[in-house]
Image 1: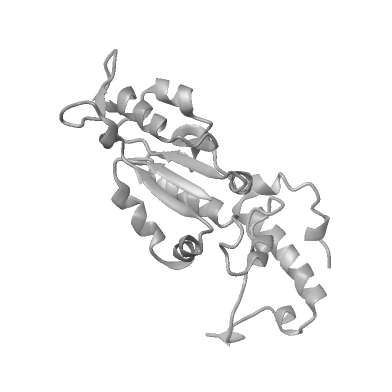
Image 2 (image 1 turned 180 degrees about the vertical axis):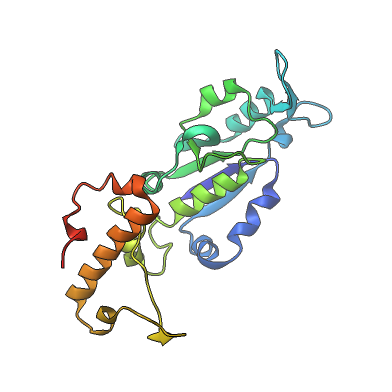
Length: 233
């Protein structure tokens, strides 16, 4: 799967993929990362990519010409343009799954006070927000989304079964997990985890997932259609 980042700061992007799982995914060919800098397409003699807002207002906007010409350079007809923005809908795990089926995603990383709206209206296939807060640019939201999507791509994770028990599956948070030793500083692991009965462990994990979701994310808990497993013994 191909990911292209349209960014004024490629050095913010490339280092994220130089270690760990996503580094191995690149080496194996499961994903491919590219950056395109709109400055390379600016017709201004100083390579400007921003301008003042028409009608006034604080700050500068990324202007139309460099971005339009950047996008024309992306000849892939299957490219799917994603714009991170505080005005977008919230990005979810289901979006990550759905977008992992695409062949080529282009993340358009805004800067300054944003992007000229004509660019967004012309090219955006989807607009996403990663939270109700404002950042200095679109690189971090794009990296967050790329990471979440990449994990869903085949041959990226070492053990793809781990996707089955993650948070947000069936609107639930993932159940708590534990490692050795069984007791540390007088804090024990729940005894049912030590009995080797997978049916009992599965039921306990299910109840703990419901309880955790109810406590930490009551908004998600309201979405759970069948709460009977929470009360199962």
